Length: 94
Image (cartoon, rainbow, N blue to C red; front, side, top):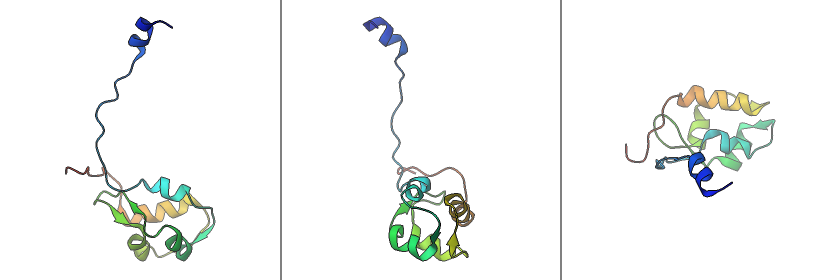
């Protein structure tokens, strides 16, 4: 591939918009399943995740989740999303 070909295939990614907190999927991917809510809180409770209302600590969200045991990661994520909602996540500047 020569320089001209590389320029034709280059993709401009744009500017990076900062967002506080980690994606929920990143936090849950660090865990093995099944898992008790208390164990999730012990291991990842201080993790800050992105929500439509802004960044929140996972331990605070867990307090509002009624389940105490999760068979699968997807089940846990559904319960968390039921508490925090879904939608656009505000950027740091908003």
